[in-house]
Length: 186
Image (tube, rainbow, N blue to C red; front, side):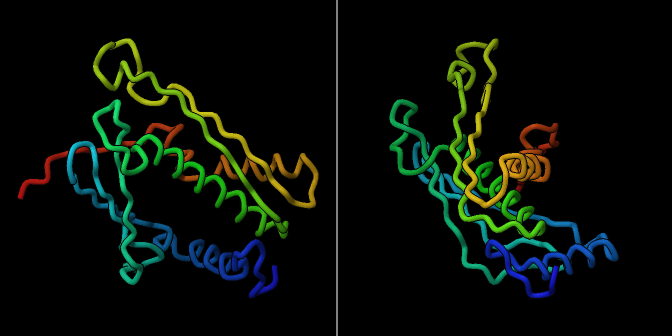
């Protein structure tokens, strides 16, 4: 790739330079992402993301982004925002899509558009502690993509496979990930 080449809105030259830096300095690959959440009322929460650590430094210059989280009325909420399980689908959609488009850009493939839809099945009996035989989380998630690019269906399938293979959110969901939950004592 030529330096300063932008494909699909991605600075491919800059990305490839960063990849080379990581190969020389593996510590640059370490990231710490952060989110804060505050309960507001009922089932309504607000989550904020702002600062993070990546590429060997702290990034604090981004405006804080706020996410409204709530449940529908049948679960005691007021439906003021997406539910946490919906945010999981949103995170999955953004991560697979970004990974696909970036992979295509590095391969020199111009993508005209990518759209996707996500469906997840939950059985609320687990969450509501009605049945111990029902999983508490999603039982299945289905993802459907449409890729508009001047490439063959086989190449579109390859982009999709790479999106799946290298998406951090997808891999967090499908692989066993350690999650530690503890009381933050003041």
